[in-house]
Image (cartoon, rainbow, N blue to C red; front, side, top):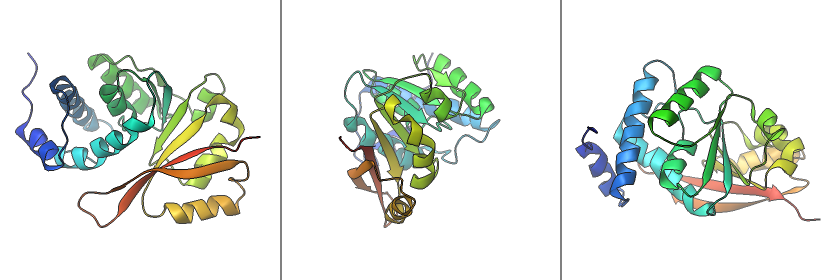
Length: 216
C-alpha cells in the first residue's frame, strides 16, 4: 500500500498554484521520500522538505518541461539527486530522459531510485564528455553544475552529439556570459533566455538559457 500524500506537499503545491494529475503528484511524493531516504547516506540534495522541493526543484522542472518536445532525447548533466532529470521523467513520460552523474556512488543511488520508481531512465556513471562520445541527444539540461565558461569548455568538442543546451542560472548569469564571451566560448554559439521566472521567497529571478550552434 502506497503511503498517503503528505498534506504539507499538497499545501505547498496549492500555495504556488501548481495543479498536476493525481498519479503524477503521487509519483513526485514517492520520489521525494526516496530521495530523502538516500540523502541520509549520501549528500544528494539540500532541499529536504516539501517547501524547498516545490519552490525550487519542482518549479524549475515545470519551467523546463514546455521547452522540450515529445519524443526528444534528454541528457541531464550532473544529475545529483535527480533534479531536473528524474522530476522531468515523472512529469513528461513522453520524453526520453537519461541521467549523467560522474560520482559513482550518486549514480548508483539514482539507478536504485529509478528502479524503485519504475522509471525507464538510463543512468550514466560517467563524465558528460565520455557519454557524448558514444551517444546522441537532442537536449542537454544542466542545473548547478558549473559556470557557463566551465560547461562550454567541457562541451566544446561535442556539439555534434546534441542540438542544444538548456542551462538553469540565477542572477549572475549575465556576468557568466561575459566571462564565457571573453574566453571565446561563444564564437560559434548563440544564446537566448528560453524562460525567466521569479525565485519564490527571494527578490531574484531564475532563467533557463538556451545555447546552440550558429548556423553555417
